[in-house]
Amino acid sequence: MSPRRARPSRSASRRDVIAAVDVGNSNITIGIFSGDRLACSARAITRRRTTDEWEVLLQTLLSSRKISLSAVTGSAVASVVPDVTDNIRRALLRHHSFVLDLNDPVVRAFVRVDYIPPVSVGADRIANAAAAHRLYPRKKNKIVVDFGTATTFDCVAADGGYLGGVIYPGVEISAQSLFEKTAQLPKIDFSPVRSAIGKDTRSSIRSGLFYGSVGAVREILKEIEKELGPSIRIGTGGLAPVVCPAVGGFHAIDADLTLKGVKMLFDKFRASR
Image 1: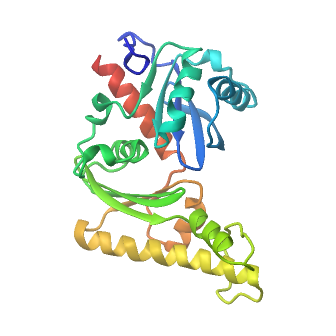
Image 2: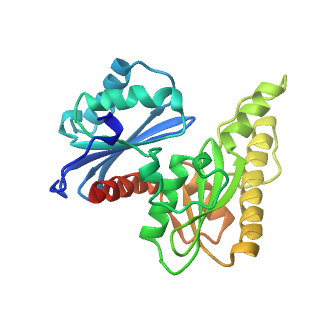
């Protein structure tokens, strides 16, 4: 039996220690759940590493939070970076026998996907849809705005189905592009600003990045809701606490939404076996 489809016991305790791993293009985030509670999370830069290197990194991240990787009893990986997925899974398999890949067709079937082709929807977006449906009012549509390498807008039907969305260049992509494609513009870290008019090159770039992001998110949400109707707006990702308040109209900011969705799909798969 392959590692990703190893069958966990139906009698597994709700107090199992489960690792939810979200592998994005820029960062990998690991969350440790004790039962349904997210005990801690940690983040590292995504890049190619050997199985040994991933094992050391994961152990280091967790030990700094006083958790041993050997205490984890099962894990689930949502990855949009195929080149690193297998080695992460192998590293986890050294410590427990059940590692679920959210790109497994059986897992993806838990969320109805109205997208062409359905398999092109990233595992992280499937996890966002699952968590939004479970955690927020069931009788309303939701829009999840995830501020990652790209800023993605995921539309979730009141019945939990994934309806499609929008992909927009994220702040990091925009800042990096300015730095790489121009001769004299410096690389700028994203941060909120008080004045739209910059008084030097750095503040001018920072203003453009901030207000450009705010304006784009606000306009895309308006156009989506013309088609979807008023919806529950949920912000997630590292920059959500910065951008969402400036955009306005968000009902929730949940930095751990993707990890929660990964864990929910893990539980759903385990219950179905």
